[in-house]
Image (spheres, rainbow, N blue to C red):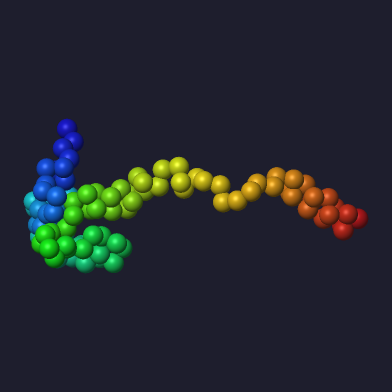
Length: 99
């Protein structure tokens, strides 16, 4: 059974609360000390000084992107106009030069 512990947290959670929800109670202190500073370099949400916690919806969004969940179909979007005929013209040019 898969329980989403992030959904049980308040809107702004402490690092300890996030750690327990993400990696479990046993590894939480290590995650807070060693992993959070590394994740912040990759865009992990910072502590909001007004609320004294990290915004949980942004933490969830960070992990969705981290695991490639939010990439969806955007990753497969075309990068420009397709010109399939260009391959044939190059071959013909190459063959003409070889002869």
